[in-house]
Length: 261
Image 1 (cartoon, rainbow, N blue to C red):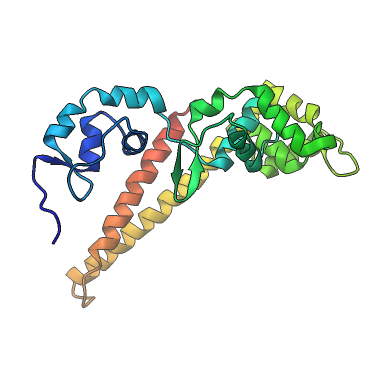
Image 2 (tube, helix red, strand yellow):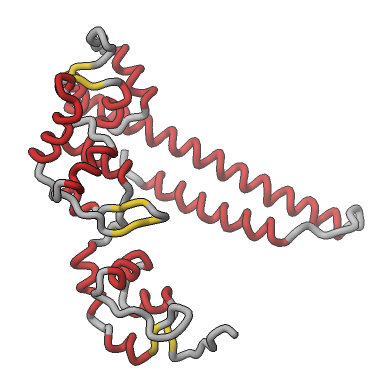
């Protein structure tokens, strides 16, 4: 028999709101012992325990920050862009193994890391790990690695490398210094950022159009039912899903339009 839920109990969402936290912050707070485990069945906290936790939200935020943790691939990309190195996921694992980086939690079975832990990493330690992996290839990078360093789409890097007549060695690798020079070109970086923003907006507008078509199709089927041209009304669930999707897409489009170029 399921546990009875009373107004004096706090579920995960309500407990997080009570403490001024997001759900992920609340989960990490419990996982790392800053916040108590639920004292009721069904992962619920009593009102008394929730009241005792007032003020602990600030400790959680101070420890874990405001940005949710990220996985190894995104961690490598963040370090690559920051340091101008083609950091890979395996480098993240080495940094963990040698004690330079902490796995803060796991998400769906994969380790995740805090952004401020990544940003505090000693650049020398990261360079040492990358150099050990690459050996004699340390001063060169392939096209994929160059795109990661610059945080550009691979096709964009290939196009600009051709435009700038970047040379490659006999292995088809670019000089790391040449790749970093591209990243130091403010005019070029601004141009690529504008291209990425326009591409993202086009993609979002296409999603908006698809959602609008679903809603319009539902309205046509509804009209057909009202006019007795259809025997069954359209599924209200499909409309609800489409409207939620449309709301989300339009919010994203608004955010993209307001983002300075």
